[in-house]
Every structure is written in C-alpha cells, then in structure tokens.
Image (cartoon, rainbow, N blue to C red; front, side, top):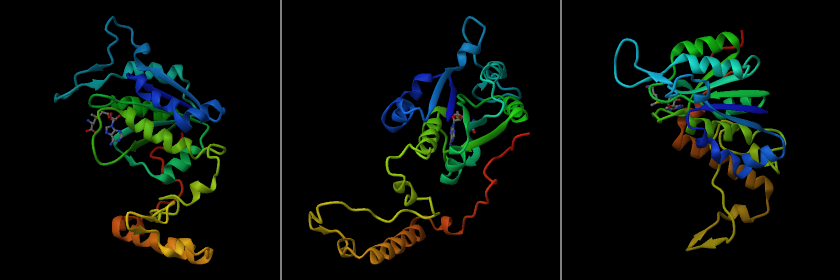
Length: 239
Ligand code: SAM
C-alpha cells in the first residue's frame, strides 16, 4: 500500500517510522510519503489559512495549496481520507476496508478545518472518506492520521507475524475481547480463572465467548445492535 499524508506539521507523523509500521515500510508492505502542505504555497509567509467567510472565530485553510497538493499527488484512483469531527466514526470495519485499498491520501486539517470546496473537488476526482476519530475535538488531523494509519497498516497481509492474533481482537467480530492473562497463575492474591489452566480447549473457547458477550453488554451495549452493511462505509463513492 502507498500512503501519502499531507500536513503543515510533517514531523508529527514521525512515529510511523517506529515499531511495526516502521517495519512494514522496511518490508516493503507500506510506502509512506509525508508531505509538507506549505511546499504548495507561493507567498513569502507560506500562508495556508485565512479568515472565514461569514465571520466567526478562527481561521480556515485556504483551498489553493490543497488543490495543488491533490494535483501533484495525482490522487485519481486513490482513496482520499479527511479526518474531521464531522466525519463517519472510524471503525475496525472501516480500517479493514481501507487496508484493501492500494493507495490512501490523508489530508490533515488544522485551525477550523479545510475550505469545504477542497473536499467537493477531491470527491469529484476520486473516492473520498471523511472520518472522525471520536466525538471530541483535536487540534489537527495528524493524531487522527496516525491512529487511522496504524489501524489500517496492521491489517495489511504479511504485517503480523501471526495473523491469527488479529482474528480474535476486539471489534473484529463486533464484540469486545475477553480478558487476557499470562504467567504467573497467581499474582498478589489474584488467580487466573481455572478454566484457562484446564487444557480443555472447548471449555476455554466457551468461557472466552461468554466473557466477550458479557463485557460487550456491560460496556458497549450499542455494539450488540449495530449493523453496518458492506459499502456503507464510504461517504462519497468514486465517480
Ligand atoms: N472546527 C472544526 C469542527 O468544529 O468540526 C474542528 C477543527 S479542529 C480544531 C482542526 C482539525 O483537527 C480538523 O480539521 C481535523 O483535521 C482534526 N480533528 C479534530 N477533531 C477530530 C476528530 N474527532 N476526528 C478526526 N479529526 C479531527
């Protein structure tokens, strides 16, 4: 997969060089390219923002540098991902869908966001997804881009040494994961549930499934009723 990220703070994306995403790049599974939006400005101050039409607080990102970025990156055929609090909530299902794309281009907004025409323009050129990390407001799209790319990249075929470890994770089957334990079997007076030491694989699987359902019902009852049909994930399909 190739992933381009455009930001006015390219250094923010540095953590993607570390740990497993870094290894994915070394292995050739991920071709990550981070771009400074200001390279597509032409004034002395490398301006990327201006006051909002209609008034109000804050600044809005001007469309011209973004337009030039989309041209230079030749986004046709890529999935353009725009982190925004008004996007569709980012989910594991969405991460899985995005992991199947050949190319992502992530546009990191700042200030009060990006001039809406940039998104309209991008959607007319290629597939566009506006995605929210959650119901809160970050200062910029970079943290959202980091989270999103990490969730997507770990699903790329060949990324995980043991792909089975992906299957049983929270949200893969719509439920939260059961509690997990390791050695020692007793620690500070707390015991590992006996069934996990029994060697009875059927009983262990049944215990885990029951724990998973119980945890989900207690903590995230909304997940038990949620349904997302395939193809529902993307806001604006390719035209
Ligand atoms: N004025 C915007 C609003 O109320 O929707 C918030 C702008 S926020 C200060 C600046 C940037 O941070 C956004 O353009 C977006 O890129 C990013 N951002 C903030 N919260 C986010 C969230 N929950 N999910 C994804 N991106 C977010």
